[in-house]
Image (cartoon, rainbow, N blue to C red; front, side):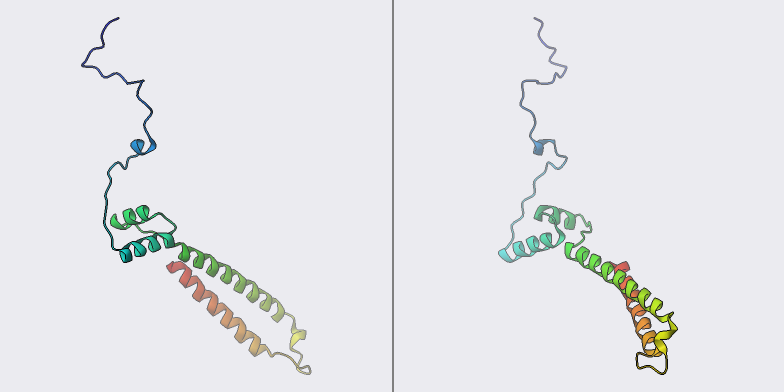
Length: 135
């Protein structure tokens, strides 16, 4: 049996498969010492973003932006509220088209009051839209 040429590389098929961490592009380890307060702050911030502490520290160190999970929940809630307000506004507009609601001989809500409420709903809806766009 001929001996392999030492100048050519042959794959070592007897070697165990590489572990997952050895296949990763991120192969360098950086250790940082923190005070207990710093550690709590980092882990708390990482949890708020929904990521591990390592991912959080890496992203912050590299200047990447992380979205806070709480902000995302707040955004979804704002969008839901905006949709609800839109539905209420639509119902009010529909109600306003029925002139019988404003018979002067009957007791009830006046057109001016309803239009004021509708105007406030539209104003609040636009404020919500502005907040959502900033997030």
